[in-house]
Amino acid sequence: MVAESAPVIYLLHGDDEFAMAQFVTGLEARVGDPATAAMNVTRLDGRTSELEEAFSAAAAMPFLASRRLVVLYHPLARLSGKAAQESFLEQLENVPPTSALVLVEDKELTDPKDRRKGKLHWLEKWAQGHGERVYLKDFPVPRGAALSRWIQERARSAGGQFTPQAASLLATLVGEEPRLADQEIQKLLTYVNFRRPVEVDDVENLTADTAQGDIFTMVDALGNKDGRAALSMLHRLLETQDSFSIFGMIVRQFRLLLLAREVMDAGGQKAKGAQMLKVHPYVAGKISDQASHFDLPLLELVYHRLSALDEAMKTGQMPADLALDTLVAAFADSHQIPDGSSTFF
Image 1 (cartoon, rainbow, N blue to C red):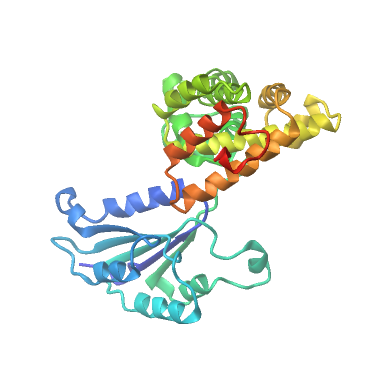
Image 2 (tube, rainbow, N blue to C red):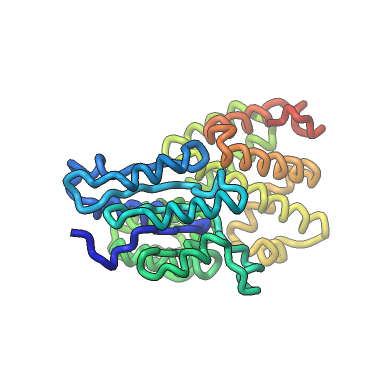
C-alpha cells in the first residue's frame, strides 16, 4: 500500500555527489525484499538514455513490491528549448504514485546570483509548486567550518569522535571531497579503535602521510618528469581509491601549488601562504616546499590542462582512469609540457 503523502518525484540537486548517492541508496533500501528489489529499480543517465525510457519505466507496475524506483541522473542533459521543457513537465505530472522517479542533477539548479534576486530555475520553480507530491532537496558540498562540523557529526554517527582541531585538519586535507573524507573518517576511527577521539597527530600520521602523502609523492615525480615513479604511485593509489577521487586530489593539489607559487613570487612567506591558501600550517609548509620545484607558467599550463581533462571526463569523452594515465604520460615526456602543445592531453 502506497502512502498517500509519499512523494512521487524526488528532485535532488547540488555538487555533493556523495550525499546524493547515499540518499538514493536509502530509497533503494526501502523498495522491499532484496530478492525482488532489483526488478523494481531502474537507473538511467539522461546523457545517454532517452527520457522516454525513464517515463516508461515509471509507468510500469511494480513487481511484488508497493512501488517502483526509477533514478534518472542528469535529467536536463539533453533538454533544450521551451517546448522540450514543457513536455518534460507534462510527463512528470503523469508519473503514477506506484513509482518514485528520482531526478539527480549534479549541480545547483539555480545560480546563487539569480537566487538572491528571487529568480528560480524553471524545474525548481515547478517542484516548489507541487506540495507533497514532489520532494525537493539541495545537496551543497560542505565547505570550511561546515565540513569540519560534518566530519565530527559523521564520526559521532559511526560511534566515534574527532577533536575540533583534528576535524579541521582533515577538512583541509580532503578539500571538497565528502566521499574521500568519509573514507578517511572510517580509517581514523578504526585506527583509534573507537576508544578515544581522533587527534591532530593521528590525522597527520595517517591521512597526511598516506592518501595525501601519496599525492605529494606522485606530484613530486611529475614535477621531475619521472613518469615511471609517478605511474607506480598512481597505481598504488588506485588500489584503495577510485579514479575520480584521485583526479580530484590532483586537481586540488595543483590549484594549491599554483596559489602558493603566486604567493612566493610576490615575496610572501609560508605563514602568509597558509593564510592565503586557507589550509592548516602543516599542509601549507609542504605545499610551499613543493611549489618551489615548479615555475608559475608551468603550473598555469598544467592547471588549465587539468580543467580540460575534467570537462572531458564529466562529458564522457574520456574515462577517469585513462585521463590519469594520460596525465602521467604527458609529464613523462618533457617535450610536451613547457610549450603548451595540444599533445599534452
